[in-house]
Length: 118
Image 1 (cartoon, rainbow, N blue to C red):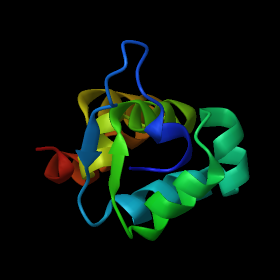
Image 2 (cartoon, rainbow, N blue to C red):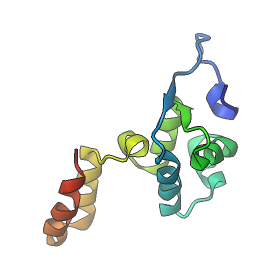
Image 3 (cartoon, one colour):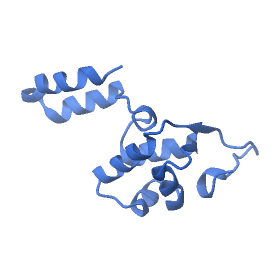
């Protein structure tokens, strides 16, 4: 059983659905947190996930979490669930990156992003 936030049963008494991530989940989570300049405590405040759970996931000692925890982390970090879980860029991620780069950098963005899309 997971500790903290993720082991809370659902209102109907069912156990939360657990999801196993790949071995790069911890580094991706840490990278996204660092993009914001946040500590684990900062991310905990923004996501509602306890700091110990964030530390456990970043350490990749047990890359398993409830779906609710993953959604809360992705929302707080402003990344897609797909990117957080498996490292693939979603259509939303690509669209957001193109918008942020603007027209003058569209060709560069296309050259970089197109090989990453699956």
